[in-house]
Image 1 (tube, rainbow, N blue to C red):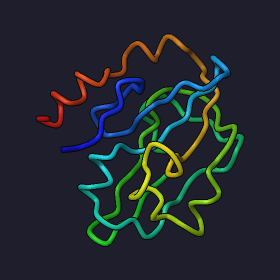
Image 2: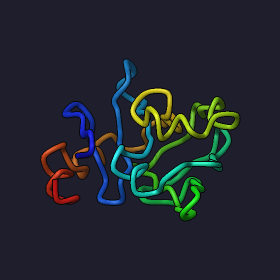
Image 3: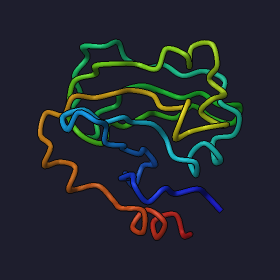
Image 4: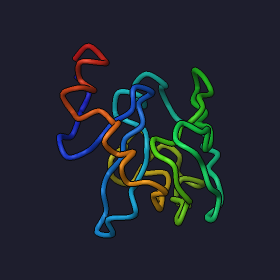
Length: 129
């Protein structure tokens, strides 16, 4: 059974959003379910800080033994930080998707877009959990 923390928000495409101490900045990564479906992550291609994305824009790719998958931006905004540790240890996405495996921190363009994301119950229903 996939780990689906109640304090996060989710997309149907298996990204999560975690609010940070700054109400205008969120942390984005892929869910435990997504990393399990992908298998062993061997490479991740993430944007540089300063890059801007619209809601559901492709912000990078994650490459696993089984497949390469696009990463979709859950909300529009500007990348303020990238998890550089993933360059040397992409497997952190498998081991700890909600901790060491986070991908980007994003300054929200429109905080109201957060209302369009799934809560934990909605995401669990989406993946059939």
